[in-house]
Length: 372
Ligand code: AGP
Image (cartoon, rainbow, N blue to C red; front, side):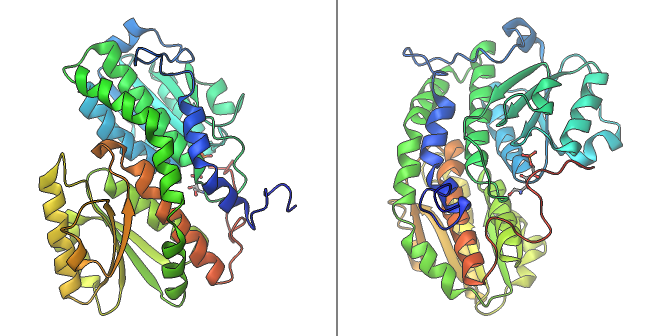
C-alpha cells in the first residue's frame, strides 16, 4: 500500500532514501568512543582470527559485488590474501580450504540456496564461516560459525539497494577489525578510516539531495539499447553493480568493465552517442589510477561515446571530457563505493520508470532465490 511505501511511489525509492539511516544503523554500537571496533557478534575469537591465512568470500548478484569491494579492503588493511567467488561456482571447482581459511558468506535474505550450499561445503572442509546477513535468524547465519548482521531493515524491492550499502559497511568493519586484531602496519590509516566511516552516512545523504539531474538524464536515455559502465579499483565492482541494476530494472543491455580492459576488447563497442558511465577514482591517494581513467574517458569520447562521469567534488580534470558530470563527495579511496553507487541506483530506477517497467517486481526475478 501507499502507506507501506512511506509516501514513495515504489519500495525501491523508499529504500534508496533510507540508505543514510541504514548505513548509520549498521555502524551503531560497533565503533567505540576511543575509535576502535567492537564486533561482539563475530564469535570467532581474536586468537582464531590471528591464525587465518586466507579469506574466501562467497555470494551472488549484488552481494557478490559487495564481496569484490571487500577484497580490496581486506587485502589492503590486513595483508591476508582474499578470494571472491560466485557462490554458484564455488563448491563445483573443488576449492582449496582448510581450518585456517575464513569463509565470508554475504547474503541479504540469508536464504539464497547457492550461498548456503557454498557455506556448507566450506564447513565440511573445516573452515570457519562468517555470515554477513540482513535477516535475523535466517538459514545462512544459523548455519554459520558467526554472524555480523547488517541493519538495513526489511528490503522489499527485488533490486537490492540499502542492503548493498550496509553489506559494504559490514565488509569494511570486518576488514578493519581483522586489521585491528592482527595489528597490521596500517594502524594509523585504520584509525583514520574508522573516523571517516562514522561520518559517511551524512555523505550518502548529501548525494541523495543532488539526484534530480541524474533522473533528468536517465529520462533522456529511455530509448537507448545499451549502456556501458567503466571503473577501476573499487570503482570496477561499482560499475558491475550499476550494470546489474540497469539489467534488472530497465531490461537494457548493460555491461560493466574494468577501465584498464578497454583496449583489450571492449573499446570496439564504442560508437556514436553510446552512453558510457565512468566511475572516477579520487585524484588524491591513488592518483595514477585517476589519471589513467581520465585518459580512458578521452579515448572513448574521441570515438563518439556520450560520457557520463561520476567524479569527486573538486576534481576539475574531468570537466572537459564529461558530457554529463555527476558529483560525489570526497571520501577515502576504499570507501568511495558507498557514495558512487547511489547515483547508479537512482539512474536505473528512473530509467525503469521511464520505460514503463515494474520497478519493485522486475519480470522473471524473485527477491530471494531459494533454488540452486
Ligand atoms: C540484486 O539487485 C539482486 N536482486 C540479486 O542479485 C541478489 O543480490 C542476489 O540474488 C543475492 O541475494 P541475497 O543477498 O539475498 O543472498
